[in-house]
Image (cartoon, rainbow, N blue to C red):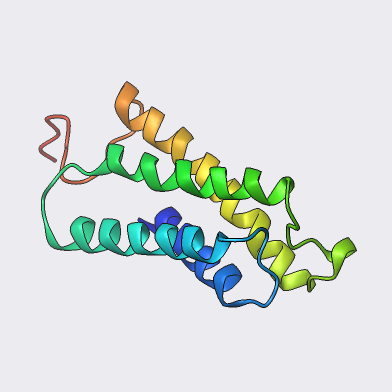
Length: 121
């Protein structure tokens, strides 16, 4: 849940900046933030196993990042602040981290609530 909050928060930070990575990026970044908000609300308020649905949000975030590479991504060398560049890169790194964590959940290496894999301690 924390990784999803980081992805959503960094998407909001970039969307609110005056250095959007490409035309229409504002919509895409707000879509990532909205998907993260829905994901967090469902994760905190229900017992649904929503972990695979977060991969959609992570994929959209990485696609926005790739789009920025072909556009005007917020890096320090092209006029963005250090903080904005860090948010931009953190969005992509947290998305990849989510894919790795979701793969570990699906493979059975880690457990995420509401599953308990039969542990009763």
